[in-house]
Amino acid sequence: MSRIRELPKVELHVHIEGTLEPDLVVELAHDQGIELPYPDAEVLRERYVFADLSSFLDIYYANLDVLRRRHDFARLAYEYGARAHLAGVVHAEVFFDPQAHRSRGVPLHDVVGGLVDGFDDARAEFGVTTDLIACFLRDRPVAEASAVLDELVDMSAPIVGVGLDSAEIGNPAAPFAEVFARAAALGLRRVAHAGEESGPESVREAIEELAVHRVDHGIRSVDDPGVMAQLAAHRIPLTVCPLSNVRLRTVADLASHPLPHLIEAGVVVTINSDDPAYFGGHVDDNFLAVAEQFALTDDTLAQLARNSVTAIFLPQERRDTVLAQIDEWLAAGHPPPVE
Ligand SMILES: Nc1ncnc2[nH]cnc12
Ligand SMILES: [Zn+2]
Image (cartoon, rainbow, N blue to C red; front, side, top):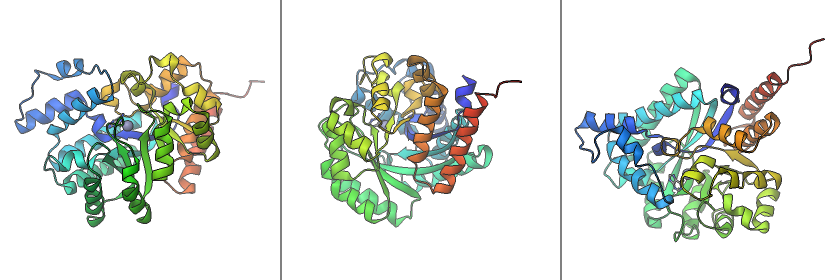
């Protein structure tokens, strides 16, 4: 485990709300006198058996009730930074769901301010750097997404991009084209969840209608050679989250995960955790699971880590630093023969 943990990693697909551990739910509830419909963290965790994405989202959104104060968000961000450091993460581009908090009456200023506080502390202590990506909820009205973008811009929120998440089936990406175009004009990067539960047409839609730089999940691309060719030719990275796919039953089991096919087809595949508090592991656990399942060599693991570096929204200089760290990791696993 430790060698995989030591591989320098960039994480590109993690929802900060999905890092909210049951213990922290219970602690924050207790702190604020919020009554919970279960006796303890263990019982809450036992409920984390999901039939599909929407059954997961029901619990994910319900748990957010304990995030009310700026320092709740700071704590959440700090805890992620600490755990990410253990996982070997040196940089993360972290999603948050502004609408999921704004609709509960939590000011976005407290959400963003708290996250920045926590990430600043984690960077000072562990050296992990982070950027924020604001995700729009695709099962909420486009006008709400547009209002959130305005609000984030008005408060000069330090976001590097916008994303699209929540329930995919029945909620196409195309209606969000105008909001994404506005984000592009503001200099923001674009990503979107697609091809997680819906088919490859959803991936094509995200690429063509939203002009995304990366596709989140995108695993159903394997069902359409045309989409696979599009991803490979334009070097559009996929942020794949294997343990999430197993737990949300978008694949039957890890053995039948399309990861090897994606790699073989030349797609820029990256490995990520999605919602680690719910799916049984952080990004290191995801690397370990696929390394074992598919007997991946150090060279392949290093290539997956490099793919994430090439997909980040940071200047080349920082990328080069992380790429050099990955090369060092690889070299350490192949010591020169002793004479
Ligand atoms: N895996 C996922 N898919 C879509 N929306 C999400 N929000 C949090 N996790 C998600
Ligand atoms: Zn996700």
